[in-house]
Image: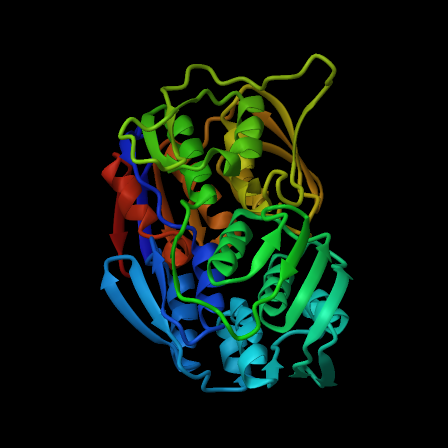
Length: 432
């Protein structure tokens, strides 16, 4: 897919975010823990979700679309004991299906395309839960073992490792305490689902969890997925950078608090209001008014403004590219510090090619000097994590930009290009 963008078109209107795709994947995997019917609402029509949904069907799930974005899942039998190389290479998140496979088939095998060091935390967690692990080259054989009481410490705050442990604890353990658990919003959704299916969980949404399992006695339930906080934050930044006025609905404020604090320091103005329809939902409306002369905002005790990524509830690494682009459009100097992953700031070379003033200090730190007038540019094959940030840069740049191999724009988010076009973005979509 090729996108041709004419920049500096202000966005105006109401934006309705899709459901969280990571929550969709986690709740879909948990749905295979039982033969009872599970209904998922607000499932985004994103490629990332479609890939995992296809794997669920291959594993034996019957999936019925009751209405748009609402799926009913029923799995009378888990059909396979193996996650083969083709499956895990196509969708690394398929690892989450290990939990229902272990719980219901007892002996399973996962084949991994890369070094097993990438899943070291996951395998260590399974061992700590008492599962029998046998390494076979780049594959792992796992045999299920039930337990009464376990207490484990995750070696890192891994989202997928936390999700695996939560599901297995609900299915195989009587009482399990998890220290150093990841706490992202989609894990909270998964934990609420497990509770509705019959488990008891203390500490939902925190880094310390105690889970009381339910064995095989899971119940059917209905889960409504929350709005995608990364999508909301991305659209808010794009609206500000194009000097538009956008109203974003269905915002769960606790998922945006640290992100909005970071945006405030970059000079982005916003205000929140409670919904007026009285439907009982705990959601807010986020208004991004037209921005005038955005400027970095220092606290009195600070000498520099920095945006530092951190495990949740810190500023998410998935927004580091968007924050860097936003920093190019606000007056002042900002340090972008990616503390979690290597080489995620290499995209800044493309921003420099568009006219941004950026000094890449090392693979983890970049200094951004704003405000810069960005110019339209040709961009090829953006990756999932930085693609939306570079897309945002083209929307606020002067002149025309072309993004080739842009299919990944809709990999995690549902129809984000079409939804931004509806707000006034000047985007033409064509085949390569």
